[in-house]
Image (cartoon, rainbow, N blue to C red; front, side, top):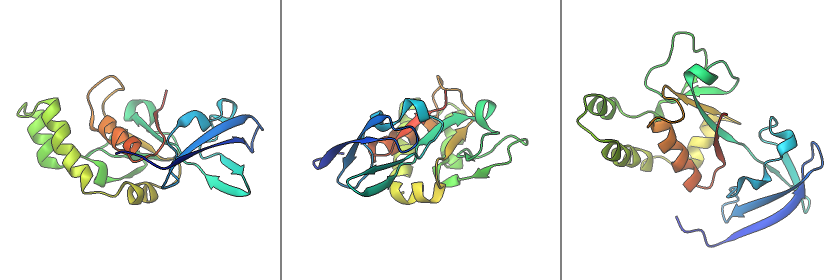
Amino acid sequence: MKLVDFAAKSTQCTICSKEGRLIFNKFNRVLDESWYCPDCSMHCGACWDFNSVKVEIDVIRTSYFARSSKLPNAISIARGYPASFKGRQYLKLAPSKDLLDEYKRGKLSEEEYAVVFGWQLDELDPVEVVKELGPNPILLCWEGPSKFCHRHLVADWLLKAGFAVSEVA
């Protein structure tokens, strides 16, 4: 996606008063995470005030069940989830059953899987998806951070749409 119109604003964190910078595209979506205040990093969705305009910024995080299933705002984007998981499930971001089965049987490479899953994501509106996920979601699936996983494809899709996304460390 080529972004033509963007603006950068210097501002202060309303929580700790640190200086920060926001970069927006023409849809008022954050393009650069440098706004993220290091002192308030646990305050996802920190509110920034500049030129008398208040902007709420949500951070979309990704992780896996073994690490983050008990965190508030955890949402499964997998077809299944552990019995201990008590969060909600958002199947629109899960791979189709057929796609997952074909991949698990070894009939699709990672590259082929990514292409087909990309087509599935192309059917969705990222703005609507983020609204439906709610504030500061943590998107979960099964694979760890270094393994191939649809969660990483979802993160890339959201980043390309202009949203701030990061993996839970």
